[in-house]
Amino acid sequence: MAELTTLARPYAKAAFEYAIEAKQLAEWSDMLSFASLVVSDEAMQELLTSPHFTKQDQQDAMLKICADRVSDKGTNFIKLLAQNGRLVTLPEIEVLFNFLRSEFEKTVDAQITSATALNEQQITQIKEKLAAKLGRQVETSVEVDADLLGGLIIQAEDLVIDGSVRGQLAKLSDTLNV
Image 1 (cartoon, helix red, strand yellow):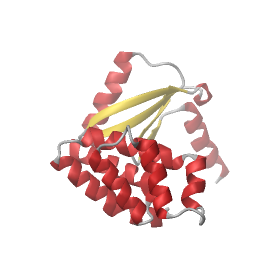
Image 2 (tube, one colour; image 1 turned 45 degrees about the vertical axis):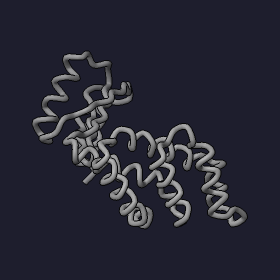
Image 3 (cartoon, one colour; image 1 turned 45 degrees about the horizontal axis):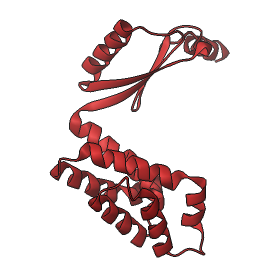
């Protein structure tokens, strides 16, 4: 994983810098997301890892699938990745690009998992408190998981706040077993 990140970082940074300059952050994010999905497909993985297909074959396949979803600059980016044998790094490039974008835009995506459904007021309160804590605008996605028993878990990048009953019971169990 660390090796893929190392290989992907310069490409993600170059794409990000171009996207800022061209004022196309959202477009590039969408293009990278789609290309990442294509590369993650099982059939495409076989094509990209098989010694029977050349870099040109891989490039042609990617461009044929992505033709309607990428710009001319996106096409050039895919060609560059293919020529350098780096198409398999596209999912990691997408992750790094989106991280750079969120840093630039001062935003963070937070996943809220709750034992029960939350109303809009509760979600807004959580977003406001997270924004104050992190100093960034917060975008949320909410999921209900009855297995939590009660409370909620919030994940925003590397921050995890576990206020669930299940989490508290696990901590208590760990304390008692020590």
